[in-house]
Length: 215
Image 1 (cartoon, one colour):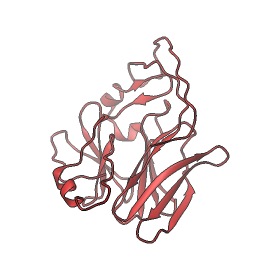
Image 2 (image 1 turned 45 degrees about the vertical axis):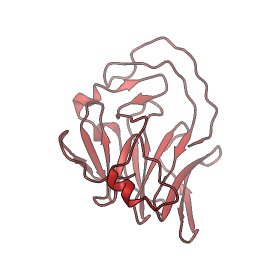
Image 3 (image 1 turned 135 degrees about the horizontal axis):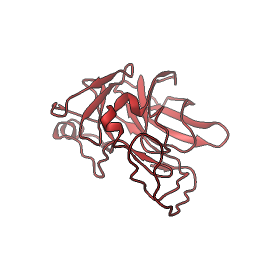
């Protein structure tokens, strides 16, 4: 994980914030920027912050060494980015999972040349009852379940067993390369998926089976 901006942590009193639901406030004030890359057997994509130009991405072919770079629109300075990448490198998505208290522009989907395909906010992915469960802090929000020790399924481990490096599993969501969609778990335990090709939201029941998954 790359960290770009200094962090300042202060203890603040609990107080209700915003109108999306009850406030379970964390005592923090963070101005950090971070990026967690995604990669597969052929490509890797990561983000970087520049004080003058803002956030940008770098998408590289592990086979040819060719790199595509460009700006990441709709992402502010304070962002904690998690990338998702298609197997062919033609699409990637950026999840700004927790930074700030804004509800819009949380999951952006781009083409490999940086063209914005779609932007989804918290209200696009959560039901009204789930929105009432959002937890806010002074400088963050929590609206997705987070796995502190994410693991790949046995099928993915077997598929990648000959790899030099097994990509780190994403703590906020999983990318299924066969179905070409990213799946998240809400705080209520419901699964919601997004098609990486066009950013279309696919609602799924809590009891749906996932099948083989990978970052």
